[in-house]
Image (cartoon, rainbow, N blue to C red; front, side, top):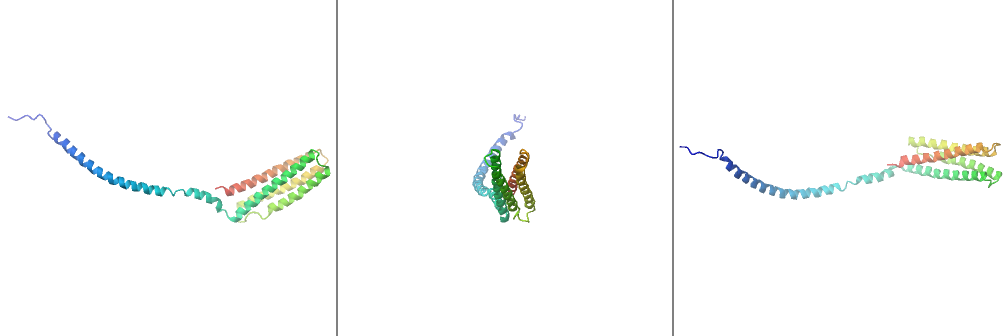
Length: 203
């Protein structure tokens, strides 16, 4: 008579023992590999730090952009910046003299002489702006400089019109119109210089 086996799958008892053995072996193996890897990882991490630190080159490139301008361009920008200061000085004197005449703090002859001096100063100003100008090899600068010369010539014409307005028989309308045009052209002249300098010095 056959003995009845209550466990139809006797392999189930062997499988856990095999698994326990595999886990123990794997744990030992992984432990050793992990130890080696830890040493390798530390070295890699140190090398990475060394390679990432020098990546501050962007700062150097930004600072060197402004110094890459040719010397003749730098000289030109300095010249027109000086001409901007001259235009401010001329405008200050013209406005002051005009106010003095309106406030009757100067005589007619004094106002006439001062307005005549402004014409001479504005004519000299046109000559100063015209020469020497930018390097001819820089087409954009040459074109912008032509605009500056045109504005300087308009400023000169405005000073002539100011004297004509002073000596006219009207009640001051011609002089007031000339003064407005003078102020507008002076402002445009200064703004154009600021624009030229900004375009050529921005990185």
